[in-house]
Image (cartoon, rainbow, N blue to C red; front, side, top):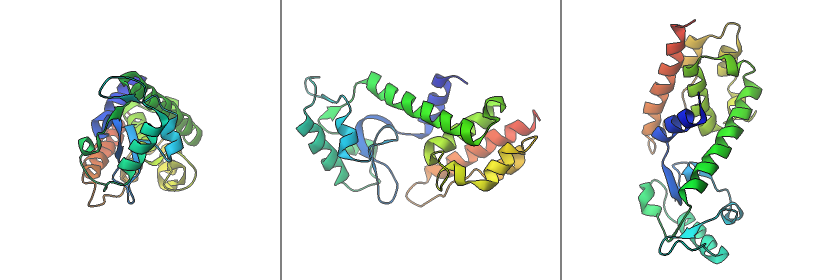
Amino acid sequence: MTDDQILTQIREFEACKSWMYLDTDSPPNVTIASGCLLASVTDALKLAFQRVIDGAPASQDEISAEYFRVKAMPGGLLAKAYRGAIELPAAAVDELDLVRLRQTYGGLVEIFPGFDGFPGPAQAALFDLGWNCGTGRHLPGLGGWTHLLGACNAVPPNWGQAAQECTTANPTNNPGRAERNVWRQGRFRACLATS
C-alpha cells in the first residue's frame, strides 16, 4: 500500500481539517489535520498557521488565542463549528498526516515483526488501529493488545481471531466507531480467503 492509499482510507473515517478542532474523547483534545493531537499550545505554536482573511502568517499571539478558544469549547461539535481566523495551508496539513503515518508505520513494524509481509487488507486494518490507538506498549496503544498481537504474530497469522480482537470501544458520543470496527473486521476476514 502506498502512503496516499493509506491516508485516503484513514481520511474516510477522520475529519481532515486545516483548523484546530476538538476530538470526541472525554475530555476532548485539540486536534488538527486527520486527528493529529496538539497536546499543548506549544505544539500549535510550532505550526505555520496563516490568517484566513489575508493568508499572512499568524502571529504567536493569534495561534495561542485560537488554541485556547478551541480548547474552551464543548467537545462533540461538528468540526466546522471550531473553525476560526487561522488555518494551516493544505501542504502543511498533508505533511502533518505524513509524519504521523511514518510514526505509525514505525510502531507497527516494531510490534508486528511480519507486518511488511501481511496481506494489504490486514495492513490497512492495523494502520487504522495504530492511527487511532497509537502503537505504544501500554494501553490504549496496540502494543498492549495482547490477543491481537498474538493473532497477528502467530505463524501463520490467525486472521479470524484478529477480526474478533480489532474493535475499539463504542462510546455513545462516537457512533462512527461501530462502522469503523465493522470495516476493520472485514479487512481481517478478507485475509482468510488468501491464507
